[in-house]
Amino acid sequence: MLDSEPKAAIVTVKGFIQASEAKRLRDMLEQVDSEGARRVMLDLKEVPYMASSGIGVLIAYCKAKNEKEGCGAVAVIGLAVKVQSVLTTLGLSSLIPQFNNQFSALNALGVEVDTEHLGTLHTE
Image (cartoon, rainbow, N blue to C red; front, side, top):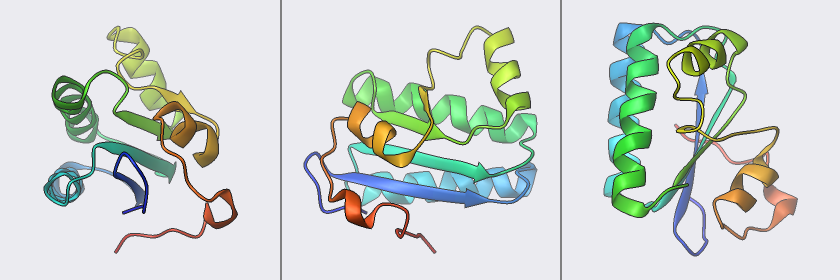
């Protein structure tokens, strides 16, 4: 969680996302929401593969978060090219805004943070 207004979180995901990992991702996102995060940035730079179950979690979360908090409540960095292609094919690429780095993603979310500390934030 970031000390920001609106309250925001960075969720860093690593490894292959298949069925069991998709459930863990969903659980982590639910935890972030329960802690009051209104904006969420997903860092997926270290996710080389995401199965359809993971893509489903990502789509469902973005839809629900945008409905609750307004459009633009979730931003993603590092989305794999294959996942980007699936989202484009399904016509859902606009649902999940993608950015090149943490600073641009957080800026798009309307979150002001001390940029000196970006890149050092981790979740367990």
